[in-house]
Amino acid sequence: MTIMIPAWVAGRLTPVEKLEAHRRGLRHKAVSVFVLRGEQILLQRRALGKYHTPGLWTNTCCTHPHWDETGLDCARRRLDEELGLSGLTLRRGGQVEYRADVGNGLVEHEVVEIFTAQAIPRMTLSPNLHEVMDLRWVTRFELTQEIAATPRRFTPWLKVYLANHAHMIFAKEPDVERL
Image 1: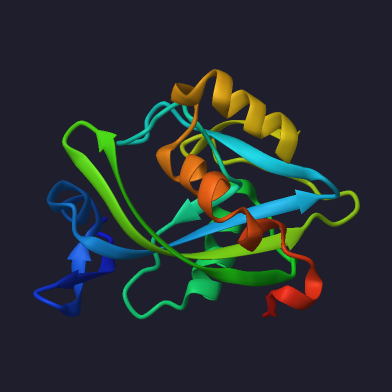
Image 2: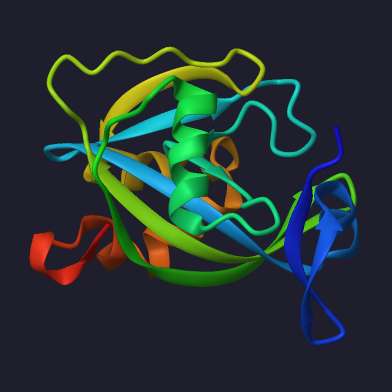
């Protein structure tokens, strides 16, 4: 199945096939979600079959909106597709742009909407094994220490978010937009 994502080509938003956007390093839309439980963040380890950054630890989930899909709808869809999660209240934390080499001649040049959600009691996780090989909860402090000690175990975008945009992820209720 060909997935068309919104990317900027010659200064205007255009539908582009997802892998082609990464091959060409085109600036494109994305979403990243962080599910929080008190001081802990739910991390996933990307499945080994992923076409870039396989086996690396990253935020709860991330993806690209389909053409004509809102960031919020995309975040909800991807939580369900990757983790079997639904019913969470998503909050928009802000927007981030970054560019990173993700290996194999691929470049992520993303304009990312950051979403957060609080875990709900007795939340059941049902990871899609084609997407996710492992899950774990970790505190922000522990994650920062792990990234400093073994940065190659983590996706480039997770490192960018924590180093430069943690305020969007860990903002208190009044500072974020409720959706």
